[in-house]
Image (cartoon, rainbow, N blue to C red):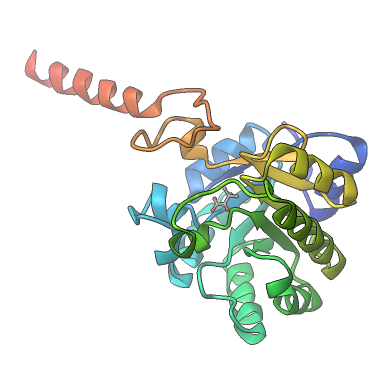
Length: 256
Ligand code: KIV
C-alpha cells in the first residue's frame, strides 16, 4: 500500500508518466478507509450519494448540508488518497456562491471540489482556483442537467457537440482545473480530449483511452442492484451477499 499522501501534483504526474488513474466514490468513513487501503489514489464524495445512498431519483435533490455531512465522514478516514467533493446542484450559480460553497466543502475535509459544466461556469472556476482551492471539471453528460435533458445521453456524436466539448475542456484546463471527468463522452472524442490536454481526464462510460477511470463504488461492487449503468460490470455482488448473510443469520437463530 502506498503510504505517501497523494496530492494534486501526484495525480498530474501520473498522467505525465502514462500511469492510469483509478478513482472511486466514497461517501463515508468505512468506504473511504477500505478504498484507501486498496490503494485507490483518488476518492470522490460524489453527489451520486443522493441516488445510491439517500434514495433520491437523481442528483438534483442533494443539498450542501448533505455534501458536507458525507465529506466529513469520508475525511475522518484520513486517506492517503486525494479526497474531493462535488458542489451540488445550484450551489455554484454565482461566483460568490461558488467560492463560499467550495470553502464549506474544504472546511468539511475535501482537498478539491468538482462542479459540472464548461465555459458557462468559467468565472466560478477561476474564482475557486483563485482562492487556492483545487478544482476538477466535469464535462459530457452532466447528471445535474438530467431533468432538462430528459435522461442520460452519450455526448460528442454530433460535430457541434464534439467541438464544444473540446473547447470546454481546453477552457477548463486554461482556467486552472487540475483534472476533468468525462462522463458518457463518445470514446474517440474522449481520446482526442485526453491527447490535447496536459491535465488528466478521468472517464466514466467514455472508453478506455482517458487518463483514468472513475466509477460509483456501489455500481462496481453490486451494492445498488436496482440499477446498474450499462458500461459497468460489477466485480462482486454485495447485494446478494447481504441478503444471503441475513438469511443464514435468521436460520441460525431459529435452530437453537
Ligand atoms: O457524483 C459522482 O459520483 C460523480 C462521478 C461518478 C464522476 O460525479
